Image (cartoon, rainbow, N blue to C red):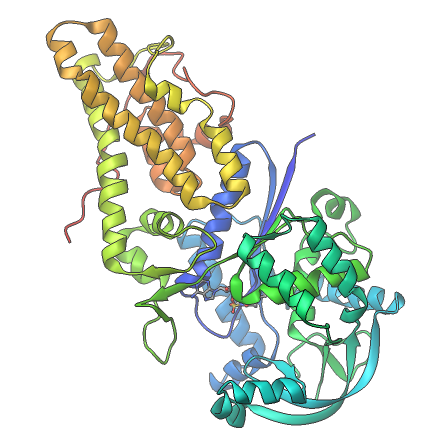
Length: 515
Ligand code: MSP
């Protein structure tokens, strides 16, 4: 039976246009999805948009549009961006879709049937910008921490009846679960953060509804027509509504629990506390892994409209191209840590890693193939090769899988690049031009076909990260584009060229950029 792999991005809020921070999770997820497909998995890669709540309602109002028109438009912007960035998602879910609403209602019903939801009168402070409640104590702490102005401007005191989810009843279960499953929350720093939050705080029951007088733009709860669902209690459910819950049992059984939820570090708590408890409360398994990555900053600052330093993916892509952008995001910063975007860093990565290392290896290999062998990769020409390039190539897929299971995108790329570096070094050391001069044709053939074998493997290895360029490289090696993704990456490690293959050298894949 084919192994399955189910991975998700967060659902992006449609209150603003996407920036490079949003693209980051999606590009990472795409690389992972493509890699797993290449390794023979049946992949379900889910992304989408989070469309309910006060922020969206207000943004729609400010734009003089109905929430539906507004969310249609913005959700489409995300879709268009993903098309531009060559994102191969299998499903795009919107929280305004019927299938999702149904799953949310079913979640509520099951939790209520299990005695997990109760109605309570609530008195406290409400922050409309973050859509969170604060108790009087939290409010006092926030003021002491210097949040005075924000509080004055955004907080309102409220009293109302709402539904509450008994988070507290499952705190012990969750602590034990996190303890017993060291890989559940990654990276380690985030796991520690979540574990220490659970140790130091008694979980309050979570208010999971909003009265309709205060918020119309939400999913009506099945327990009262006067309330809609609180954003997180709506949005998190997408991870199961998209894989068959509650009606398609076979699909649900096939994909759930998800292999990984990729998220940013700012949404750690809903994903590592609310979500596992919601699932547990319904008798469902938690996801296998939650991985929280770091933030992209600009000049050490958070991107924000008011600072005017927001970087849009399109602006970067227009200058450097889609693949260099994807490459930069995943290579520049270890996944999990914060990173800084700058054009200087982007240009340097492009010129050094892409133009020099990979670009040159491709170009010089193919040029020499044309010069010395009339452009034909000779069948079985490097079958018996005994060189460092082959040594490094063997087992590459396995090494990458270990790294990518730990979401170490940057390390995985550096592993591929060490093969590229080795191949470039090998050319220098074996000096094909001298072999030619000395008429050592057999030796020359082994050197050159070894480089072609390495390039074939490299094309597949980089495909998850830079798919267009990998396909271009693959075709320059005289291969059929469709075969790249259909050839099992792990199985044929060497001696791929078992028949004479005429190369099709084209333009350099990464022409050098001038600073
Ligand atoms: N709608 C919620 C998620 C619901 S998931 C069921 C949400 N949306 S968001 O649009 O505000 O953020 C989506 C993701 O973008 C988050 O993972 C967040 O970490 C990420 N990023 C937003 N700005 C970012 C950077 N500057 N850098 C990296 N990622 C950042 O939260």
